[in-house]
Amino acid sequence: MAITIYKQNSEVRTVIPSDNSTHRSAIMEENVLNLSFTLFEYVGLEVNDYAIFEEERFTLLQAYRPQQKSTIEYQYNVPFHGIESELRKALVIFGNETSFTLDDTPAVHLQPGRYSGCYLSDTTG
Image (tube, one colour):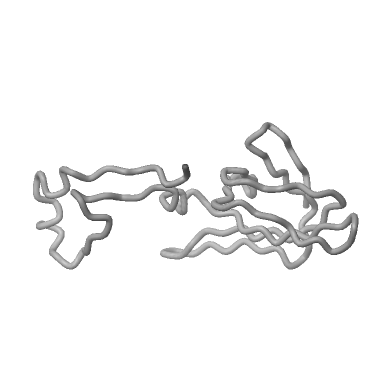
């Protein structure tokens, strides 16, 4: 089964994954598509490049450089992440702190104004 990788510069690359490519998804775990394939030219993959698998979008969260196997052969073992991992691109800030605990009761966390200083900060650049 061929999978198409869409690059941010509008370039499109169709690859044939090897048999050791995997899709792992479970409740309370990451949703990851690990693609292994070989290309006969160098193609750098950048943050936000993505692939569609089973009608779901999987995004690259960090730049990937393939392993060169010979002068014309490049081996790729690329982890693409489901939409659940998109929050990794942001830094959640509560007031002046970047970490918080959830050891209070739900009622305490739902108090009006409790997280009034909460916002997201882009960490990708």
